[in-house]
Image (cartoon, rainbow, N blue to C red):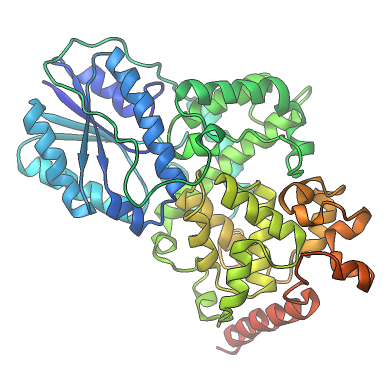
Amino acid sequence: MRTLVWFRRDLRTDDNTALSHACAASDDGLVAVFVASPGEWSAHDDAPVKVDFWLRNLRVLGEALARLNIPLKIVTAPTPRGVAPALLGVARECGCGALFFNHEYEVNEAARDDAVRRHFEKHGLIVRGYHDRAVLAPDALRTGAGGCYTVFSPYRRSWVKAVLERGVEVRPAPGRQRKLDVRPDPVPERVEGFESPVDPALWPAGEGAARARLELFCRQRIQGYKADRDTPALDATSRLSPYLAAGVISPRRCLEAARACNGGRLDDGAGSNPGAVQWISELVWREFYQQVLVGFPRVCMHRAFRPATDRIRWAEDEDGFGRWCEGRTGVPIVDAAMRQLRATGWMHNRLRMVAASYLTKDLFIDWRRGERFFMQHLVDGDLGSNNGGWQWSASTGTDAAPYFRIFNPVSQSRRCDPEGLFIRRWVPELSAVEGDAIHDPSELPGLLRATLEYPAPIVDHGAARERVLAAFKALDDRAAAR
C-alpha cells in the first residue's frame, strides 16, 4: 500500500513519528503533502515572518525528501473546510490508500483533523494519527484527582517521573524509499498577504540549521543559561523556539541534548549543570501549556482560564495600545522590547513578560489584544505558549501570578539590563543617556530631558497599580459575597 504523509508543523525528516510509522507500514512507497491555507493562517493571526519561515523550511524539507525518493506535493485550501477534499484529491491522484499525520492540539486544528479523518474513512482510506509535538502527549499525565494540571511545579515533577519511567524514543530519519512515478511540486517563494519584512538571514531554514543552533547552545551557552537567561543584551538563550514551533527539530532531540549536558539526568544532583536543568524546565513549560489547551479548550476560544476574570472591564485606550505596539510608551525597556519584536520577529522571553505586564497592568488593556499582536509578529508564535504567557502576566490564567504581584517595568529594566546595553541598541534616541537615567529618562533634569526625542511615560506606574488592585479586589469581593 502506498501512503500519504501530511506535513504540518513537523517540517523535518529526523525523529518524525508519523513519517517513521508511514515508512514502516508502506510497501509501495510514500508521498508527502503540505496544505497551504492562507485563510486559516489569517484566522489564526499567523505572522508573515512565521509563514515565510515555514515556506523556507518547507523548501529545505522538500529537498531532503527528494533525496529519500519521497515526492512533496503542495496543495492550496483557502479555508479549513477545503483541507479534507484537497488531501483526498492528492491521495487519489498519487494512488495512496492511507494518510498518516502528527496530531495538532488546538481546538480548530483538532476539528479540522477530525473532519479529514471522517472524509478519508468515508471513502475507504486508512487514517493514522500520532503524538509528536511533545515528549509526553498532552493527556499523558493526570493529577491525583484525575484532572489536568493547572500549576507548573507539580506538573514538572510528574513529567520528570514519567520520562524516567517510560523513557524517550528518538527515531532517526528514514532510509531511501523506492522511486515513484510522482512528480514533486515546487514550493512557493511567498504567499500573497504574508510578505515578511524581517531579514530571513536572522532565521536560517532547515534541520541542519536547527541542529547547528542546538549544538552551539550546548557547547557554548547552556552552562551559563540559568545565570544569563534574563539578560537580553547577552546572546545567552538557545533561540530554538521558532524551530520547535515549526517542528524543524523535535522536542525529544532537544531533551536528549540537554540531558547529555547534565550527565544524563533530568534534574538537579551532584555535579549537575544548572543551565541544562533550567533549560529542560523551559521545555517542560512548553508541554505544560499544550496539556492546558487540551484539558481546557476555552483558552483556545479567547476565554480566560479563570472565568471570573472575563468580567474585568479593561480600559479602552486606543492611543495607549498604539504606542505600546510601536514602542513609544516612554518606558525604555518596554519600547526596546517592542522594537526588537517588530524588527526581528522575536522577543527575549523575560521581556515578553515585562511587555505583557505593562500592557495588562500599567495600561490595563485586555490581554487578548496583546496576545493577538504577538501572534501577528512572532516567528515562533505558538498558541499554547503565547496564550499561557499572556494569561500568566494578566493574572487570568493557570499558575497565574497573583494579581497583587505587579512588575515595575523600571525595576525590571535595572535588573535585566543594568548597563542599558539592550535599551541603547533598540532605542537609539537614548544612546547618549548615561547612568541609571537610561531606565527612566523622566528623572533627568528638565532642560536635558527636553533635548531628547523620546516621549514622557504615558502612564504613572503607581496610579496604574492602584487601578489594577481595585479591579481584581472587586472580583474577589463579588465572589465572597455569593
